[in-house]
Image (cartoon, rainbow, N blue to C red; front, side, top):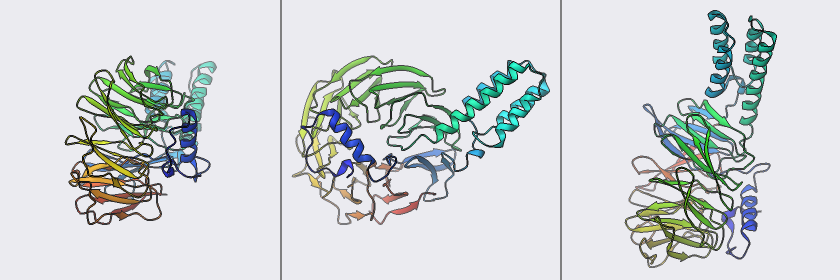
Length: 452
């Protein structure tokens, strides 16, 4: 079976449910028993260190610039050295405080909690210390059961990620990264060391999209036709909104609105309390692309091979553009132009106001484009599925003389990202590698192997 970016015919006549099954099964092929994921890289400054968070299958790596020596990786190779989450430690300490032990015993137990790992001898050490206290048999048994429950739960969750598809969320202070696993597990990680702040594994829904963040709240959608808002500090649910179809893309936040695409063929605009402002349901098939907001319009691609522009005020249609295959890549808006790539292998440039073509003809990459392009180095950087990377003139759509750069023996499905200067482009293929491309000169990219 081929990947979803390998289709050459428009599937617009298939029912939405059939499209969803086809696309997800295709994404999973070639990597049994789990899908591989296609999350983009996330550059982040942690203290004085410049790191890039990179995913591969079910892992996240924090890499210093141009280095394969990871500062940390998640999940860790050795669980016996991985501490339980901050929230779990706080819960155990609260239970210890309720025992009303003397100060020495309380301090000793809290020290053991600080050293508690999700597996290994630290669990036995803490339970032995609990047994040695003067607490009642019932209280000691209850506390030891809590230790077993927490460590078993968190150890099990680390093995349930399966794959990471969507954007890694980042708190405004850059201290916490939020990661969504394909099997529906959510993790809040300390960006300094990769340790758990909290995790949630209480949803049966799979997660294909990623995490959007603002001050104090994270937002994400699920295959179970839900959109959730959680408290970023604790993971406690704030609200839930039900869509009519599966949600496969990261929500987009703009001002006081949360924009969510769905395989029911809709784009939802929600307020930040979870109420629906409006719903655009004019797409002829499922919508799995991430919305992009610019000015008073939202731009979104769909499985009916159309790119849509709708009004932010009420969701009414401005215009639509017809391609020859799915628009799944995240579009880019700059200088009054929308740049959108499709699975027909073409890159379109159209006027934001009218949808009229800005180039004489779309650029043809010669292969399906699933990853969202970026503007960097004064041009549009586009990565085709077969590893060919182009730099296009923004005004004409012509490829630079240095194009294409070819990444051999790899497939590119993840959105491209850039560093803060807009000069370096990060490319995450399906192989265990991070490529860094000089967008100005389009020289051969840096090749950073991921730790194995």
